[in-house]
Length: 336
Image (cartoon, rainbow, N blue to C red; front, side):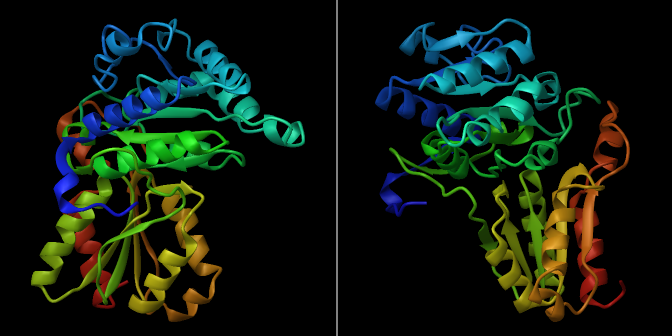
């Protein structure tokens, strides 16, 4: 992120930061358009687009029909014509209906046409559990799209990065998928004024430590930080890395940290099997950092089941602070 003085930082919510990024981009470039279901007068399923339709009109803030496949296809076509569309899915789960356009079209057209065209498309996915929205509206599916060459995938965990990564995505010539955890929309934090970008592909060390490394994504970054404070009181110094970008992964930041601490815990909300933590673990195991490990790598991911509606069960199937504490204590004391 570009350097900013303390005087140009304000407290904005995660949702407000995203809306400000879209506003800045739309004011600067008429090619930037917004598309999605109920993003106009209604302001978006989570109120993120707000009143942008009043400022820029329905030609640039377009409500799409209730067809994710159709809407995604129009967004891909718009990008191919030179526009810079930002397409919002009401829930990340609904992107499953548009995967043909995302995976077979957006991700591959530049390659199949030998680089003659690009697809400068940004897609926004409200994702994650914690709202009582049950199995079809609470998934974390970032590993699906991250598996596809041609797509970049980011997961901002703070308002400042939500703004900076969106603006960076709009500069990118290739499709960028942005997964926004729904619980974070109301979270507030310092956000620089004006235009700036957070580099895609760069992780952030949000807490330095020497005893173990915790690599986390999205809301799990905040749970990892909460756990790190409690661990410090017990004499365990945890380093916390906010991955920020799932594809491409920031190899060197993670590997350097593991070489320093000798221990690694990966924390992510998505189902544990084949999740982001599996890729991070494999990356470490296939590198020279493996020789620095003093304990097995630990993955903390979601349970092997759909997200329940019941609030207590919903909490139980995704990692929580006590789970991170238990894993950290075990790995620091050689119990794994």
